[in-house]
Image (cartoon, rainbow, N blue to C red; front, side, top):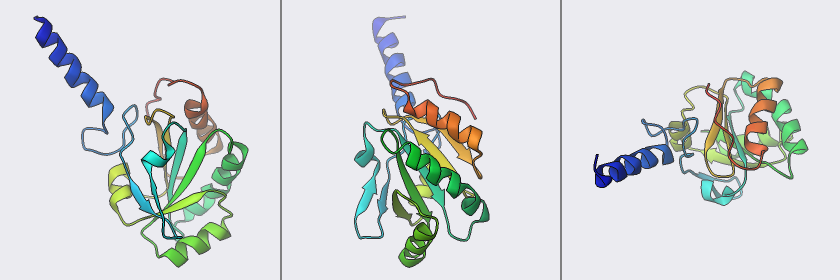
Length: 171
């Protein structure tokens, strides 16, 4: 093979590893898709806001029983890890008042964003809840569909909390 052919293959390989999965959605070991979420206070949250920090994105809705079941565990983990991991709640297609009331009721100690459907599409949230673990380099390290259990939460937090980029854990 010529040097040009090898360079072209390497460039294509690097580009495919850098972006979201083949269907454009979040995928383990791929760069997290960009997002822009409104906040209840009228601001916005974007992936860029969390650059260089490990990030947990938890997608929920007030009407979702599994979401209500897992949130105390996630809230506890957020409080324990506040100095090293950023948590963001993503309320799925609910009114501002509903989202803020639910966040207060569940004692969420972190920011929430309001999704109007784009985030769910980009992150594959076809059912709720879904929790996405992104390392400090912006790479998705784990995706949990359904209510997360304590052991999975602990291992996925460890994947993103460690310095450097650990190998992605397949799901």
